[in-house]
Image 1 (cartoon, rainbow, N blue to C red):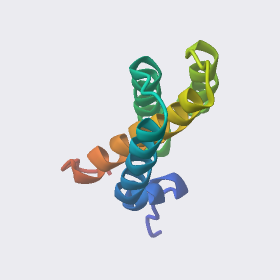
Image 2: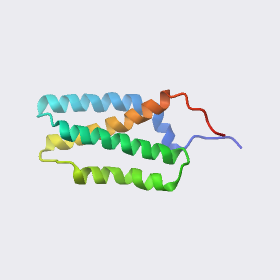
Image 3: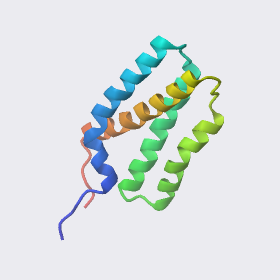
Amino acid sequence: MTEQPHVGLSLVNKAPLGMLVTAIVAVLANALFSLNLITLGHAIAGGILCGALLLAYWLGKGGLFFVLGVSTPLILVLFTPIAKSAALLNLVSGFFFGFCLVLVIYKFLPIKSER
């Protein structure tokens, strides 16, 4: 039987472009509006956590990682101060930047398969 990568792992090759797009959006948003470092920090940390949890699920570590991974954005929105639309833009762009960062790191790590 041939081994096929999981559907989620196909995002790994698109992650560098995702980082570029989200970085451009964040820079433009912060140039036009005010920079909120707390929101941006929460967003990047949440994206990194979500990416790591979903990556663990895609690598076959268990369904609990999927549940925690898809719950991360909801928890992030609940606990991040979003007073203006600029903060929401920072939240979304920072989240996807952190998510793509984890996938780029995974792409370039020399991890050997256990199979």
